[in-house]
Length: 307
Image 1: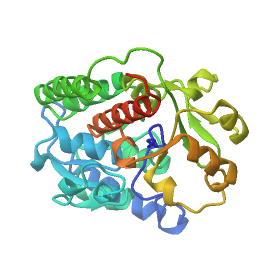
Image 2: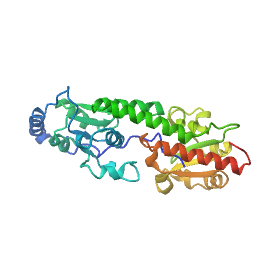
Image 3: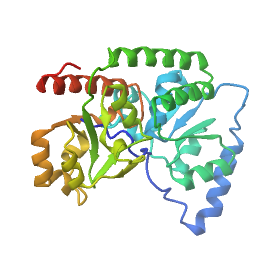
Image 4: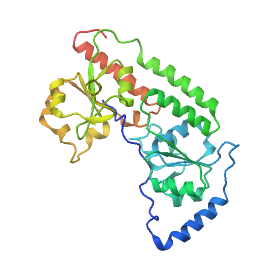
């Protein structure tokens, strides 16, 4: 039931389609610059036309902004497999993250991830647009920081502070009483023998729910390689995978289809967690903690222990 928690950020679109057309570059730049000059934002006022190009900033914006402030969200905001707020996103226009479609929207604030196409970010900044970038959250502390920062950017600090307070209260309720006795061991295992270790949101989720993280105990920092043979030798109590990884068929997937992995899954709990709960550190991460607490109790019951 792993969360693909420390997965890379998801951004709308890929590289801008027009940046490689030399004969039209000058004309396009003049056109965009003219549009940019017509929509110079006023820094003293809260933004009124916010455009998000990243799945994670989509969700932060929807949680904090007034609906009328949002001019557009990334296409992935409506993807129910990836977005914890896909239904709410239906109310907003969408974009594919290309500069030529963003400029006509006359944004006074563009929200992006640090993995958003560099060419798009560079073009927008050259034209005078304000672009604010967010890194993937690596801890609960990062989630709180991102919420408060977004509140400041949108002129909604009170709303953001209230969300943080609600987040902390719901997180404490999801965790429940602190686990006692020996803690079970889990690993979040991705295709390609990748595991989430120290310095990831996944590590925080497991610790909060009363689990030891095998990857962290093996010294893995961030997302690192965990050979299948070593995983089998360590025999964790639970192996967690994301919903997409449970279904993907890719050249990197043999570790999940390997007979040894299947044998291990027959002994340990193999749990699947919706990816949307953990990709961006949205409030859905609370559901991830709650699910892991339930899994810990199931493991304890099956082993005749009380935790």
